[in-house]
Image 1 (cartoon, rainbow, N blue to C red):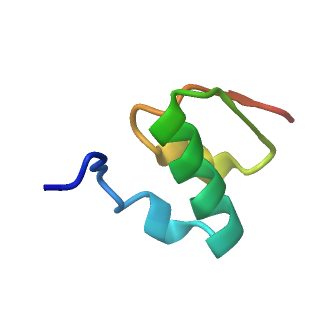
Image 2: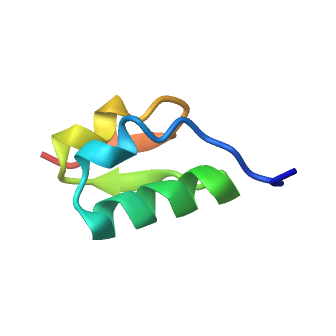
Image 3: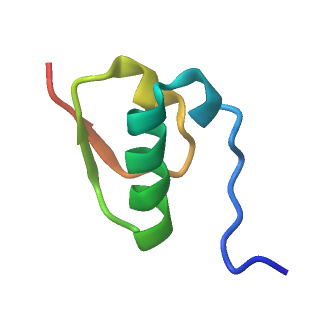
Length: 51
């Protein structure tokens, strides 16, 4: 059984690099600082949106 599971539906809408960064932030509980408003759709991801 995997140690880490997440709903990837929102991640699939992101570019590869954004998806990897968002998944890593979710995994370690970090806060994501992003200029990509699509990242807001990732549930459970602590984040700050930089306009």
